[in-house]
Length: 232
Image (cartoon, rainbow, N blue to C red; front, side, top):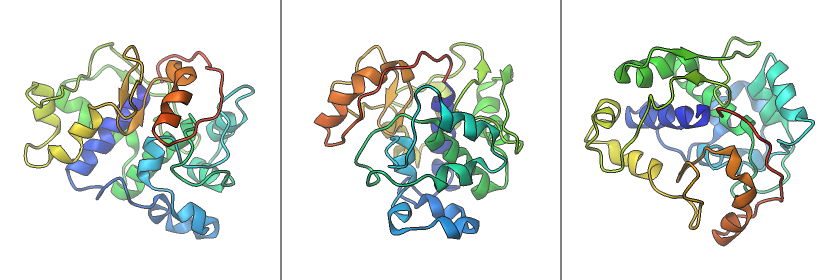
């Protein structure tokens, strides 16, 4: 669920013109990380974060070294972007919280506000959602990829745009820039029991099923055992 909230907040930010589009380079939002730039890393875009195909060396399996390091880092976004490139961006699907963490960092850089503030302003307040609890990083940012606590069923997004909540979140003149993408299936054959969107893999319990689906879409996926997690 936390990753779904991140995707919605990003979608609203694009709708409002805060972020231009999903094809912006990730490193363009972090000019102070100039020492990390390489031609390969310059090709990583917001789209690759949303589809978890940024190509950096992230392992989400036990002993969870990458996520534990991210959780302890005073500069978590630098940590993620400092990881070596192991695949071209967009070529291999690899489930990881670091990609979603970078979306929160990008929104923070673009607005000067922490992700929890943006989520409240752009998403929760318009929907009347108030009972929300985050977990926190050492730098004061919320974990926007994991462990958000909120009432089940608080947020819904309907396909055709007639639900009251969509009219609150997306302006009719520009909602086509995001909403249709966020309510259609990204990968043919994605299990119907899984939550999914065309630009956001949101359900970690479906990771074992994704390999054949990803390959059928021209994107390789490593063999991974699914780690049971709650409320991601």
